[in-house]
Length: 347
Image (tube, rainbow, N blue to C red; front, side, top):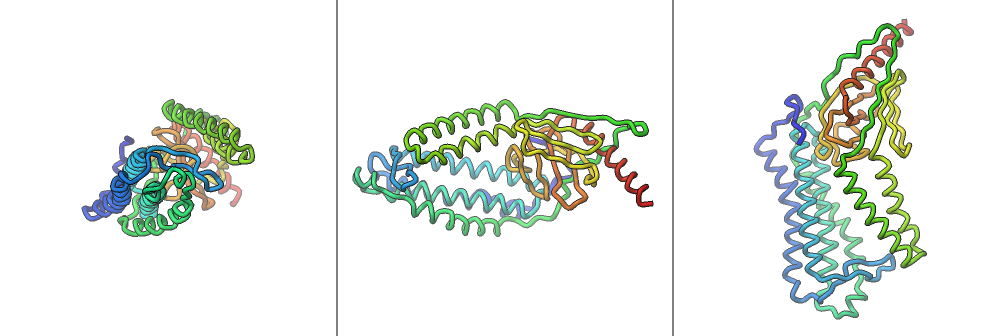
C-alpha cells in the first residue's frame, strides 16, 4: 500500500467514517446478501440445470447447476464491493473530493444491485420449470430493468456518502534542473505494467480470443460481436507499455502501439510536481485513467509520478515513472525558460 503523504491525509470524523461504511459497504452488501438468500431459499425448487447465458436472439444457450450462479454472485458481488470500498476509503483518506467519493460509492451500489437483479432474477424465475421451459426461458426483462433500478439505488447511495472538506493532493514542487545558459538535455524513461498485471491480462485476453473464435465459428453472422473483444484486447495490451520523454518542447507520452500520443507543450505547463500514487485509490485501476481533483494520466504502478498542472484549463496530467524527480526537474527548467522568454517578449 502506498504510504499516505501527511500533507495530503484527511482525518475523517466518526460520523463520516460511519457514513462511508454504511453507504460504501453495508448498503451494497445488503442487496447481494438478500439476493443470495433468495436464491438459497429457491434452490430446492430449481431444476437440475438452469439457463445461465442467452444469445443475441434471446434464446438460452448456456446452462449450469443452480448452485454455480449462487457461488458466482457471492464471489463476484462480495469481491467487487470489498474492492471498491477499500479503494474509496483509502482515497478519502488521501484527500479525494466529495464528488469522487460519491461516484465510487454510487458505482459500488449500482454494480451490486445490477448483478443481483440479473443473476438472482434470471435464476429464481426458473423455479419449477421443466427442461423444455428452461431452454425456452428468456431473461431480457432483468437485463433491461436491472440497470434502471440499479441507477436509482446508486444515486441514493451516493447521496448517503459523507461530504468532506477539500484537501490539496498536489505533489511536492521540485527545483529546476541546473542547466547552463541555453544548454539542452533530454530525459526519457520506459514504463510498463508489472509482470503480475501482464500475466493477468494475457490470460484474460486468451480467454476472450478463444471465446471470440468459438462465437464466430458457431454463428458467422455475429462476426462483429466476435471482433469487439479482440479490439478491446488490442487496445488494453497496447497501452500497458509507454515511453515518456521530457525535451525542450515539453513532455510526450507515447504507448507501444503509437496511439494515443499525449503531448504537453512547455508553453502549457503551469507547475510541475512529484507525488506518490495509489492506482486503485486515486484512479480506480491501471492504464489510461481519470481520477478525482481534475486529474488524468498513465497509471501503471505504485511508483512516484510526474504531475503537470496546465495553464490552459485542462486536467492535470499524471504519469507514474521511475526517476520522476529528474524528469520533473528538467520539465520545470524548460517551463521557467519559456516563462522568461514570454516575459521578455511582452516587455
